[in-house]
Image (cartoon, rainbow, N blue to C red):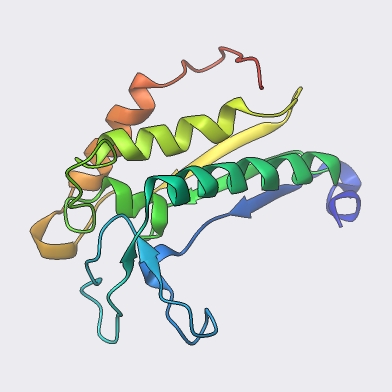
Length: 167
């Protein structure tokens, strides 16, 4: 598929995401949705998610890294990590959905940890890794809070143009 997408010089970029609390038990075949905290989205019909454990957060980070490795092996030119539209990554930045009091709380720390780690693993060469972020969070009057946290986390991460050794 990546080869066909690249015909004529087009770059084949695979978008990857985790819906977190934006999913539901019907889509997940009876499994409860997960999120940073056990707080339902302020969207009609939203279910109360189960808060992820530290081990589960680490596993999701590793899952993103594995998908990235597979995209490289499949011939894709890059991945775009979808951290917008109140999907799981943004849920860690939002003061509405991230009410944790541990090291993954406070919005910024957990989210920056989750974004930076997948970008460090594997042997990418000239493989592109992009991140999509929303400009705000309209849940419970938190407009702009998620975006500010996201921008701070990115600013504290790797500098543009600086290569990291993938492990």
